[in-house]
Amino acid sequence: MASSSYYGFRFLLCLSLLLGFNTIVLGGNFNTLFDNLFGEERVDIRDDGNSMTLTLDEYCGSGIVSKNEYLYGRFDMKVKLVPGNSAGTVTAYYLSSVGAKHDEIDIEFLGNLTGDPYLLSTNVYADGNGGREVQFYLWFDPTEDYHTYSIDWNPDRIIILVDDIPIRVMLNRQSIGVPFPTKRPMRVYTTLWNGDSWATRWGEVKIDLSNAPFVAGFKNFKANACIANQGQIENCKGFNGGKNRGLDTESKRNMKKILSKWVVYDYCADLRRYAHGLPYECRKENLLQFE
Ligand SMILES: *[C@@H]1O[C@H](CO)[C@@H](O)[C@H](O)[C@H]1NC(C)=O
Image (cartoon, rainbow, N blue to C red):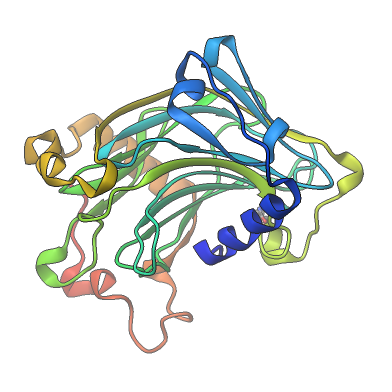
């Protein structure tokens, strides 16, 4: 599984090749809200900043990072994934803080051979603890059209949504000792990179660089979020008013359908990995129906 140190390593490789550039940004969303993270001209922002493509070529991937740090919020992005043979490519849309005990909320799209399904991989790190992967196949071809992928992070729960259908809910269970991100502001990242050491069939299928460049499209980024720059988290603590923002009946019904059909992997069901005991929040006595 991808760990953030792995990301870090990737980025450093690219940065060291291209140090010294600086993208000047003007107007619009991607332009005003984000900085170049790596890959420089492989980040192509258009439509007054409303749309963007990221490119991965034989030398480097590319990515952007938000200028602001946020504590809580809902972040929507329309994404159209790399078509054709995308094996080994990883398109990631995630929130992350920095530092040793970091928090992170991940949506990663693991590419595949032509005709084989993409995997949508989700994970949550809190206080540096990760290992909470839940993975899905999608009920549509994510390379054919734009679809909306969302992370809704509030003090009570994290909800991950696809086209407004919740596919994963992680409740804040700090009361029973389960780490949950509540303290560290995070930035929004969007990246496309070569993860072929692990991404496709656990690394068995490598990237075919003769297909490069690989291009993914992004548009209509939307953040309804609390800005918490320079550690200023006080104002954000009750963002969403600390209101219970659970799922309505229809969302619950939709989510149940997705869970019954499209889940490929759930860490809470991995008895081999957790032979010595499931993570605390997965144990029978602690399991909660999503609310
Ligand atoms: C790729 O396709 C294979 C075969 O259908 C499948 O087992 C795998 O889950 C797919 N996704 C990834 C990322 O390996």
